Length: 269
View 1 (tube, rainbow, N blue to C red):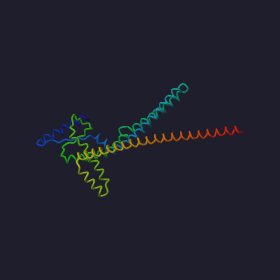
View 2: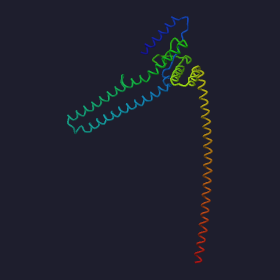
View 3: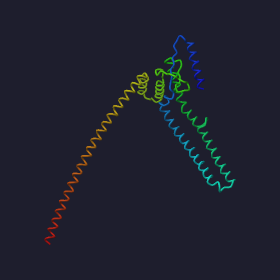
């Protein structure tokens, strides 16, 4: 499969070179894995699918443990059973094993639930990517746009031909178009879409830097507050200790006076 893709790509390039020798061939590429990793909707759906897969695997593991226990029990009781009962137990174990195999195929087979749900998961994102690729390729006059994460072997790829971030930006903007309702939001979206990718990156870097500075200020304020609270707590503890000592000293003096009076009274009597 990979060899066929390589031959097809080479044939396309040769055809382009011979058919349009007077014009340089423009080739861009995307990294589909990178794009999927940065689409929040895909990540959320992938997390849900991972949870389902974990449940399926746990169910299979549970059934396999049951089979192992059934075999262990049979081995322990074999000497006490007739041949007929042994065969019945073995048939029962085989039946359960077949059930587990069928369940594995249903969940993880070539046409199983995992493949179907993964296809359902990826297909909408792929459609968005393909639409964005077509739009950007036409706008920037690319002759070919390749997928770096596919079977195509790219021995070298200059980063300046990578339009993955441009595709992600286009997908995000398309999602925003379906969410804006007010006129102000539409005007803001219009201004946002007028920005180039470099301008968007610069804005995001400024926002990230501002957020980092804000986080640093909040950290410093929190540390100062913690220091003040610690000092106040120490002072309060010191005050309480002095107060407690004064109360104890006062009580001892009072007890001493009462004791002295009692002795005088006893001596008079």
